[in-house]
Image 1 (cartoon, rainbow, N blue to C red):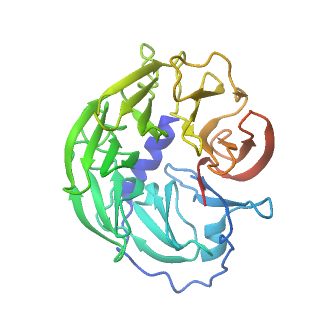
Image 2: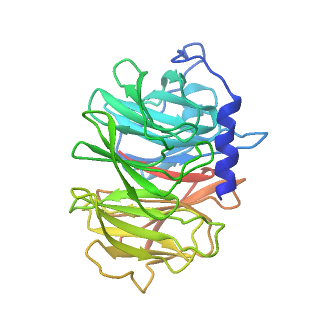
Image 3: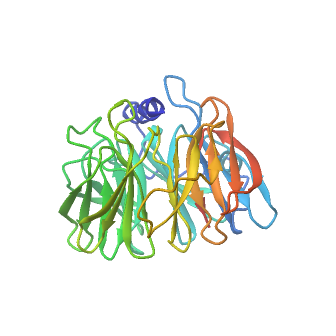
Length: 355
């Protein structure tokens, strides 16, 4: 629900932290996240009385899931509305939107190493540009934060005139989606293109309102799923295919029903798209000239809040937030739509990240 995001994101303005503070006083109980597996982001509850979010870890070797791994490892809450995880070498960075912070963790045992808060207002996602630098999107202000991965400091700002959420990096360019216009009064219907060498905005591609999810395919084409304003009954979500070399739109596909969230994923080979619409998940070849008529998975009985595909075996992970107040579940399907596993996880599971 958009209202849940609104509540959670607004918490960012009410909380202040010390930048890059160390957390060495609490007793530690390291967890083993060193093996191959899937991190499942659980947002918790926003609002006036927030409940902390956390992460679950599905260990591929043991076929077991462990919940609340941040709390277990650090003996303290992560905070409401963790919104993204970025892996970098032996580290994991968890963006916590509701508390306007980023937790830097040891990716092998999930112990916290530092907390970054300086200059953050409503951070959403984080993307690695190279071994030394990352960008942080923040819908509380226009543009992007430039983050030094060696010092864990925000060292710059890239002005775009709009706020940014999702980001994709390809051949020296970051494609940035302008999903929200809550805090920055500007049209939220573009994919902005940023040159990482000059760190400047070089182009803007107009798409349908609220471009929320983006993936890159095997032919280096960018696919964007826009929700078109869930409360606007006259507009339908649109899937847009963009040529990343010419920056031109090549195809648009209008979905037949409204979607509350832009749930879009792609397989590890970059050949097959998966998207949710009208109570179903559909699979679609990147070379298709039309939307598929037959659904792959029926999700009409759940509150689907996230979709991801394991790049190694093609398994499809669908997060079920249930009523957005209780512990959720994650369903794992084969690439052909056969249910393989059901996992009980934390409150409001959303994104899944593979390692």
